[in-house]
Length: 303
Image (tube, rainbow, N blue to C red; front, side, top):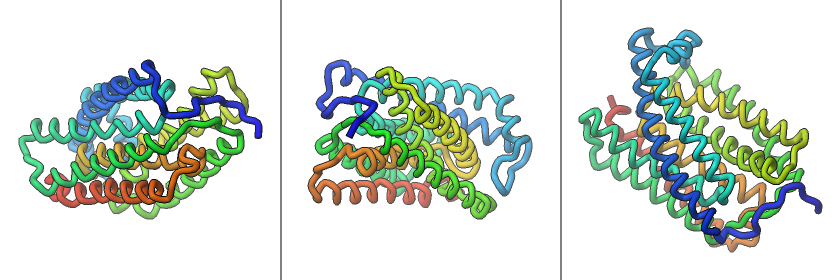
């Protein structure tokens, strides 16, 4: 089968690829700080304009642009995105993408210090449950995963799945949005951002390898649409929940979706033993359980 994108055959990191690990970690710091400032900006705009029962209105979205906190947070998130794109361009997605979980620890500490409200033992256990689940997931992926050439058919498959996901998200939004459910917005954003990371990886590698065709254009459109809708979901999640919970959901669900696509569609774990596959499922279950526990026990959520 012919392919149009050549990638490394294994996850053995070169020194330059290993350098992408601290780049991804610095990006996680900016992700954490950006989330804090954006969350504060959303809360201030809602305090001024009132809360909406069916998601942020156009008036609220426009009001965010005039919020200094939100603009500063957006700039920080922009830096985080740039650093993430650099890291996934030159290093395997399954290695650097889940490192964003570090942002959860930073966000939790920063939020607790700035608000003066301690998390409590149950919330702390929920945070560590998320991190342990992601760590196990990444550990297994690092041992059994490998990057292989991406075929046109595989890219088409990813785009078709994204189209189905977009339809489901838009339909469910009309049914769930009125309940102001933070977990709904977080799960939706995490899934969408997982596709953003995967397609961004493909697009960037196509540019690096000098490959540009109509499929690349569709992939770029998919990145823009998924990122825009995911960004709107994140702002609504800030409105309905805490920054800690938002970061927990994104740093758990985003990499699980991205790595899951790599494993199932892109054959990045082809030949892996059944024990590894079972480990993926268990680790993902542990991480997602941590998100639900944090949603239940976080002080701001209870309030």
